[in-house]
Structure formats: C-alpha cells, structure tokens
Image (cartoon, rainbow, N blue to C red; front, top):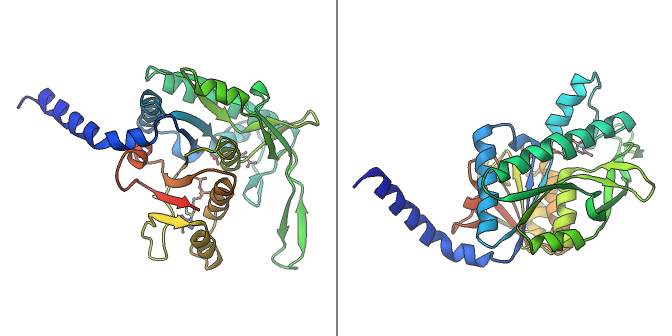
Length: 297
Ligand SMILES: Nc1ncnc2c1ncn2[C@@H]1O[C@H](COP(=O)(O)OP(=O)(O)O)[C@@H](O)[C@H]1O
Ligand SMILES: CC(=O)N[C@@H](CCC(=O)OP(=O)(O)O)C(=O)O
C-alpha cells in the first residue's frame, strides 16, 4: 500500500475510535490551563494549538487560560529585578505588576493567539480587564511560620484573588467562531491591576461557566501515588487524603486544592496531565482511558 493511502487509513481508524468521545464533548465548555513550563518548545506549542483548533472544529467550546511564570521571571531578570515568591505566589510591587501585565497580556498571550490562528482558527487574546470579565481584590494570604508556629499575614503587593467573573463576553464568544485565550491579569474595584496565579484564575473562570472539563497542563503525567505510578481517577475525598498523608506535596498541593475548589464551584471534572507530551489534550479527551488524573466529586 502506498504511504499516503496507509496514512489516510490510519487517520480514518483513529477518527472512528475518537468519534464517540467527540460527541460527548460537543457544545460543552472545556477550559485548558496552559502553564509557562509547558511552553517554550516550538513543536509542542504547535501541537497544543492544533488540539485547541481541533476541539473548536469538533463543536467544543474551548477556552485557554495561560500562565507564564518562567517568562515573567526572565523579563524581570532582564530589567534587573529579582523574582521573589511567598507561599508559591510572586511578590508583586508596582513595577513588577507592570511587567507581569506586559508579559502575560502582551507577548505570551499574542504568541498563543498566533499559534492557534496559524491552525486556521480565530483566537482572540484577552485578560480579565476585557469586557469587564474578571474582577480581583488584594489576596489575603497567611502562612504559619515554621519556627514560631505563629500565623503571619503575607503582604504580596498586587497579587489578586478573583472575586467576580462576568460570563457575558465568554457566552458571546462561545456562540462565535472565536476561541478566547485569557491572561490571568484583572482589575480591582480599587483601580489597581492585579497579578493572579494562573491555576486559580482558570479554576474561577471554569467554575463560573460550569465547565464540563478543566484541564491543567503541567510537567508530570498527573497525580502520582507513593510508588510514582499515575493515579487515573480521584474523588475529592481521596485527593484530600493524599494531601493529608503527604503523597501530594510541593506545587501539586495548591494545584489539587484549586481542582477541588473548581469542582465545588460547578466544574464537572478536572484533569491534571502532562503538557510536555504532544497532543495531550486530545489524548485526554478523545481516548478511552484519557491521559492524566481525573478528579471528580
Ligand atoms: N503526588 C504527586 N504527583 C505528581 N506531582 C507531584 C506530587 N507531589 C508533588 N509533586 C510535584 O508537583 C509538581 C507540579 O506542580 P508545579 O511545579 O507547581 O506545576 P506547574 O508549574 O505546572 O503549575 C511536579 O513537578 C512534582 O514535582
Ligand atoms: C501571583 C502569581 O504568582 N502569579 C503568577 C502568574 C503566572 C502563572 O501563574 O504562570 P504559571 O502557570 O506558568 O506558573 C506569576 O507571577 O508567576
């Protein structure tokens, strides 16, 4: 058989296998959080954009929320500003928030928009400010000092928490040809601009839309058990237990806590999966066993 004939046969077989899953997500909202660590590789970026374009072509309503932590760090270094984190969040003064907005709502946002457009779709780059979509207020975080065991209030500057999501613009876009690509920057009612952790922002947007799925692309296959094996599915109660017994640690704790909050806010299922695997979004949604860890109520 000629190569091209063989290829079309493989494509037809794949398509027939994927078809039932494609129907499952038709007209459903799927929010995909694309993290800064998953970016940077040209081929992976193109595969990601192709997946998002294909979702739209299959009748899904995909919404991309992106991060860009490492890219903000690199720009701050260029400007001679040191990155400082407390409790996993970037301490953000006035100068830093200006750079955060420039990098997130500017260069990274437009790069993702261009990648999706190159796949023949119409992406539109936004942040919380556009269409009064998201409002934030100053984050109220505390940490327990490990030496004294005393609770301390963290002043993170212009780090925000989402307090309001207005779906008007996103509902309009869902009925259009446009794919929203959203940077986690939002205004406060106090007139300031706030820097919001991209996972938290994605969780709030997905919750307000009662999304069918929220996908978190990270750098591990999903939630791993004590022996390093991928856990395919977790209930909220099981996820709490894995945090309590130390199986889930470090950066995975706030991620899983965000998953739980999103489910409590109305998301049907949240998946943590490896963004460093090409086409992980399609593998997750359009195959029998998915690709990552599915967390459900
Ligand atoms: N049980 C676990 N399963 C998977 N990853 C875990 C687990 N516990 C801790 N981790 C760590 O969490 C990291 C993912 O969190 P983080 O680095 O904050 O993600 P991202 O930068 O993609 O938002 C993994 O790279 C891993 O080192
Ligand atoms: C408050 C806070 O920490 N905001 C993050 C926003 C970007 C982000 O979350 O990007 P990733 O998803 O790539 O980590 C930051 O400034 O790095």
